[in-house]
Image 1 (cartoon, rainbow, N blue to C red):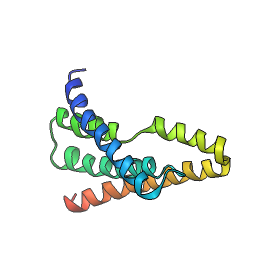
Image 2: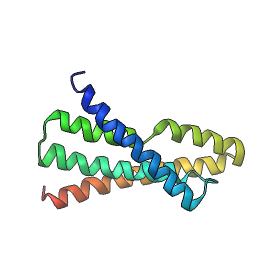
Image 3: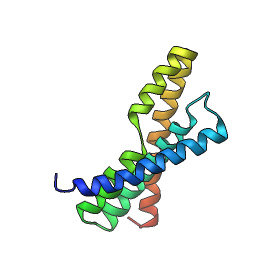
Image 4: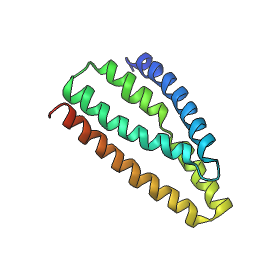
Length: 127
């Protein structure tokens, strides 16, 4: 519990970034499909992978910096609860096939972007 302030600080910026990112993507691609949430979740997975390599493996930063960036910022930037709500809403309004497409796409792109972030981080920092 000693890093609560670090998580809160990063979380404040992450939540603002998520709000702006979802609004921007949804404004450009529409709201019929949850493109905004999908985009921030996939980008967040990439960022988490890259930050893990950079902060933990390469720089070996103090735990409070990891808490600010990874738990706080990325944790607030990505949003599993919104993903779950939008999945259920898609199922109710547009059918389960559309909802399953969203869920599968989110999972595959999320894991892929996490792996890409880790790979890029290791390549950048020659690990």
